[in-house]
Length: 356
Image 1 (spheres, helix red, strand yellow):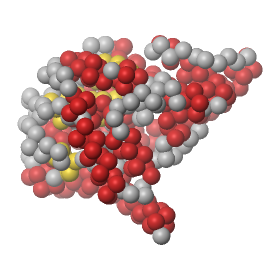
Image 2 (tube, helix red, strand yellow):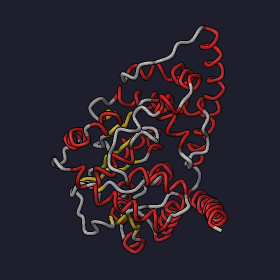
Image 3 (spheres, rainbow, N blue to C red):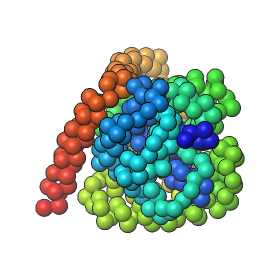
């Protein structure tokens, strides 16, 4: 089932262009780069050594995928539950392939992919697990100017916290985790800056294809056009009034552009930029993102002290996910399904309130 399974990953903190790259690669006729789904770390620690999957196991997986699709709708894809429940994975890696194959690309339902690319920003925190799962995996690290990332996260209606400290600290945390992995696996990790991708999408998508040893498609951005139309019509038809969906896929429905590269310069005030640069500047310089503000010792120290306490909070939040993923599967799935149902009900209520 999984002997010849080529399985790679798009990583990097959210709002760094990971979904744009995923969409570009999925337009390639030989590549599956389906919707974001968190099932690998969710099941990995409990099932990484499984060699037999029962009907109950597959039903729990099905319940997870259906719930995740409500939490974060699979726009442009349909999860084929019938196909999935008929699958017979021989190990956890095979189960991953069965899951991917069960996501049907609505614009190319008969696609026969020879290469698979998974995109999920949170996978950036599980790189060693992903490598253990498939040692041949490669990783495309989407990088974006930390100030632009902070500003984008503040503007994103579907993200809970718009605090500059919180988002700057998270940027550094993701950066250091991935950098440590890259230092140990330099041939397995390719850095792609968001700014470079949007300025020259064809050139840099070809570099990614070469890194993945995939056939070069010189017109990949043009192949994305039907998907951009699909995003626009599907969101307008099925998710009208849902701001998080309108924002996320509304951006993707637009032609690739450079307008967002320097929006942070006007969107963030001087103090916000100073905070981001004090917290992220050292890492940012490594990727040629130069600081633009100055601060005295008192300003620098006060920002660092505040950032220290935010860092403790961020680490606590992320550690909760790590611990949760180690709980028994039946409990986790049941809890997750009920949790998503509550969120889905609240979202629908908010949409109904705004439309009446």
